Image 1 (spheres, rainbow, N blue to C red):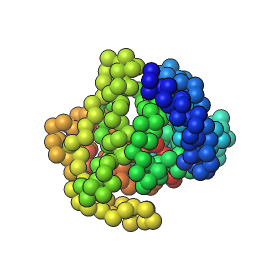
Image 2 (cartoon, rainbow, N blue to C red):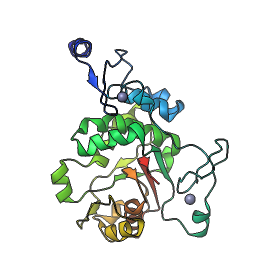
Image 3 (tube, rainbow, N blue to C red):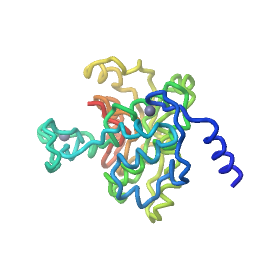
Image 4 (cartoon, rainbow, N blue to C red):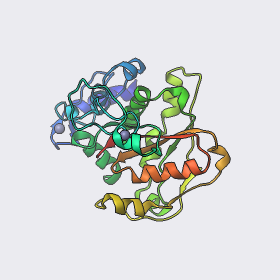
Length: 275
Ligand SMILES: [Zn+2]
Ligand SMILES: [Zn+2]
């Protein structure tokens, strides 16, 4: 109660700075802002969820700068089709039909642009780990829209090498799902996917993927991951979590490693996709 009075007082005196445009603004005092109701996680469009969770950090105009991934997109790799008529049915793309895909189902909350890009950038490079909480809720909402809870046993964040972890101080993919056990409890699910932070490891230091082409990215992460305890992976339907899906090299290398260790299926969920 005291905390809420203090917050109201603080917001009425000190405006917030929008993380997208840099303008100062007064966040709404409505107590529903910054939180989402479980009902709305299921039913509201993802752009509405983005607006709700980002209201404390973005001005009202920038909180609308979010591009959802809209149909038609590939049911396997999740890539949107070029011709975006808006009413086309999702179906498998030619590439996924021809080449047996490593990943079972790849999905993202939105397109890597606008306010989502700025917020992810602020989380990773401007030392704002508190943004992982609203982004984690956005990601959980995508999880519920795109996956049947009964088809995921284990959730694994893409690991960072220890040297990168020391430099940044946290792994953004881990931070995104930290609150998920509470969110699972909130939906009163009797089924609970296990979060596994230990068994997939990055055992080789790699240079940043930023600025590398598709082939270079593939080579850069080749053999970079290892499974510590394969008995925890064997037979499991795994979901890999990362912040951005660019060419998919990192997620595919993780998936290959997990499948070698006996994973039944490997899916991928990210906040944004850039391809
Ligand atoms: Zn703004
Ligand atoms: Zn595809």
